[in-house]
Length: 140
Image 1 (tube, rainbow, N blue to C red):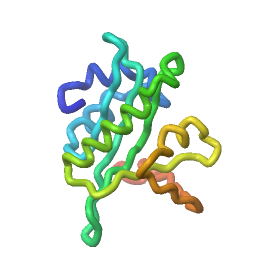
Image 2: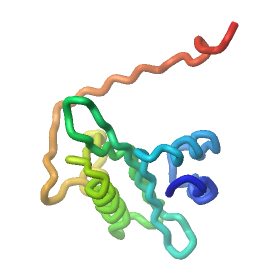
Image 3: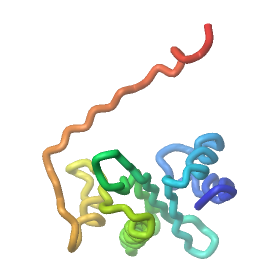
């Protein structure tokens, strides 16, 4: 998906954790380092994967797999693996040196999808999240 595909993303909204927002969708699709791939069964969106290229001055560019989702009725058909492979291919085309993803230790479906030849599993990470109060930025 890219700029102008907003309607397709919004139509696939049921695949996401929350309904897709028009403003967030437009912003995501405008960024050339953001990638969203949607799998279809006919005209029906049945899965998606999103990724973001991450660059840093002292490291090669990597692709972070943000999220993978497949409609429950279409799971266990290889759609998640095909989407993951397609995102890896995008990473290769874009010159990324690696692709990485984080998942919960008990997410068996995700682990089964990602755990394959050529993948290095790294355990022991701790994640921290800062919730930002954007209201502080609004003029008084």
